[in-house]
Length: 441
Image (cartoon, rainbow, N blue to C red):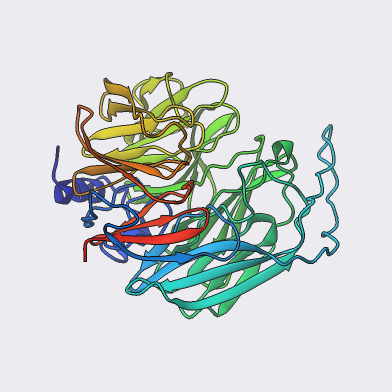
């Protein structure tokens, strides 16, 4: 396996190093898929083993409910959450149904406070808590969903928190709201709820709005929230966070969809290339390294496409732009992981882990992680190891490489759907009830 340093250099030379990573040299965890956007933390060395009595530096109870990943910058751990108020207030006006569709279902829940929280890395103490909206949601949820499933992101200057139909907010690092943007009300498929996060490229935020109404992708100024461009889309509801990559001096926004896999110029919104779509209910976010984008989904089918950016333009129907494809055991909810030349993903929402050679698509292994029957969180990696956490509190640590090698199986008294965050010697786990810092010191 290539060293972490070589992996980071390769990403930089390929032009796919995200702006949030270059701002901190890949040290922090500024967005839900980490500093490289691949699930890897190139400078972290978290522990291999933990339990409720081992390597838990602190454990705190989180107010409300949410499944967003913690993001970490300097001494702050930042979360979003939806806190029930217990007040039965009228919901906002229900939007008109999409043509041929049905009205959005009204949530039976009370109103919620939509909050951004910042905790200290060193001690877990609450530094600040900011309520950005109080509202009764206009629509219900999937039984496993929450109203705070989209993760925050930060560039160290501002924190961006996206609550979907409740708005997009920019806060300073002290928790003061700088600007906000209302993009409307989503009507999600089967009222399953919302969950995608924005993507950040330098001073541009990109948000996708795929639902059962009018779809669009929009770019906003990260400085003041003003709209830069907006393009119509034609997709059923998707939950995939867009991926921003740079290639040949050009920034691209890659968005997975059921009808099309599309790339837009990040400065203008112009279409760069398009390929055949994935499956229904696209949730996994694309990843990229070494000039190749990998997009996949796995509901009612299996689809994985590897797009070579050097050859990608216009309509992509086959090689050389389509480097390879794969149609087995792709994920429904968890996003893939790229590390050390390997592409890792979980079958549907199960603990069956597949590894492919990222360059060729050649299978390396596909094996069941017995301790993880149900997985929503995306796998992450650091220091030559892969971390996978499950819905019943178990976590498996593996050696990254062409064979499956389990290093440890760990358990905590919580349930984990949010993806972990890895920084320095620390692992941050957001459970259904608690936020954990796992570290040896």
